[in-house]
Length: 157
Image (cartoon, rainbow, N blue to C red; front, side, top):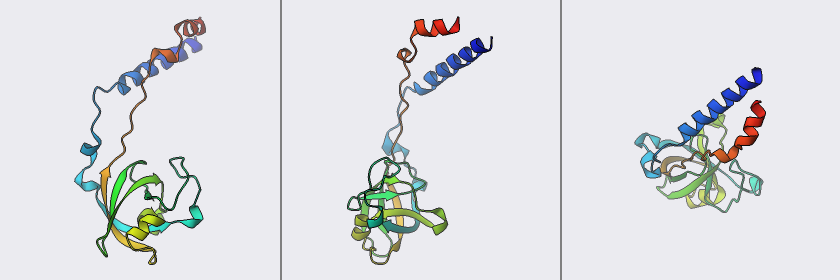
């Protein structure tokens, strides 16, 4: 009896998930960026000590690429960073998580991004973050090929 109940609950949850993931439309990434998404704060950078280490997106860090670490933007998002001291701008891709919130910083940039923004020697700079493209996740389709009907029926009996 308990096994049949578990199977029924599993089938119901799979059906519910299937219905929920079958959304008929997908919002465009450009439409996801509200005006409030802009942030002002302190940026720092990281480089040589992290070279080659795995980032949150699974790739290896390259200090010569235009990447960033941010807690509140989705991985894969592109954000334009403007140095408020000199007006220089660079567009980076969020590939990692950080910086540590206790430091009071909004973003950690790669060494190359810090050089282009001209705060490499200073270590930190006040910046404005302007999301260019927020990464949008998409639910995987759930099909009947995940559970074979004959195998499923055999488990119930």
